[in-house]
Length: 464
Image (tube, rainbow, N blue to C red; front, side):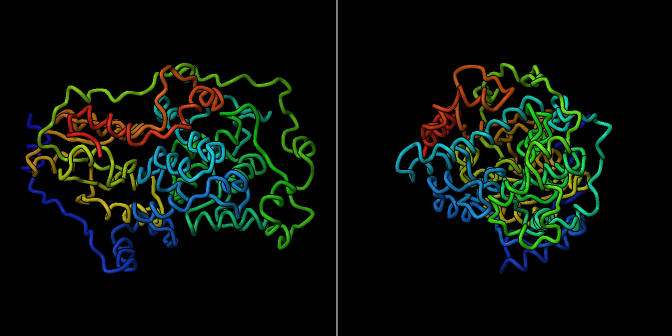
């Protein structure tokens, strides 16, 4: 049987490199509309948010840790807007933490922002353990209702932003047109979908992933499960008073249902209305045994794999021109592949395609599309490479593609820059258990030393 490289070299197909240079953003958008009609069919609104490391660095330098801590729950608070760049590895959690500590007058001023970064790290660790299991209820739902009591699909009025509730319709519109929602708005919208309309959280999670520029399966799905009570000890809900406090009343003042909406009432009244069969016994901690004691992940195979002429495989979890792969092998040819099968199976909106493409054109990488593993092997054959270097990811899709590539060529999967490196196994059944063991590590700047450790592992010539 011929190897995959031999097949790709002899099958008569000529790879097509996608363009990287555009005179202006409108030209890029026009190109993407023609190249990705499936994304256009989902939604082709164009947000102001731009992708790329240069934009991310400007936003990073503008963060205000003290104001963030005091105002983050308010829709007009001093939030960072860094989530899309963190999700795609354009920035690392360690970078943001280090800048937050530098800009704060005292470490305590940065503590709230650092703990929120910790949530993202926590979710990634859970994702690495559970993989596609994050799409299943991790625990029984604690609302008194059974799974059969929940609808499988989102109602059309929520999708269209036509519920008549000014707040919910505004959140739906913002999600579809901007690809951004404040975290509090995400929680309110998720609680409305799951508890007030009794729709399964998976339907809402898919909706968010279609549109959010920071659409990340780990943070997205596990947050929905937290709201739904399938990864928390009780359901999250809100009332009009809570919403009005953190929005300044901007929606309630113009709502046609003011004073008689479904969010009226105390929490006790809403609980009785929404969950008339609510269990009275306190729910135990997570029953997901795999999360009880998890060893710190170490990139396996770093030392045994020695590459002299590799290519760099760029993927959606690491779109950083200063990633460990680019640092360890400067000048190595790099490749990104749009996964056509994935885009057909799980379509995303044009705004997500645009954000990713803007990140890509700031990388020294060839852009292609097709079957990822096949195209990586084809590119390696063209470059006469002796292997593939990339940055590790908790994504099950990444692991599947890596295994396919390794059937032909060695793959050096460098670890991403760590947020924390705990010395003991972690209990991931709840965030509080995880944070209890890593908080002291999370409050220490580590970026430079962490990158040095990675580069020294592969004898790359030292760190920056």
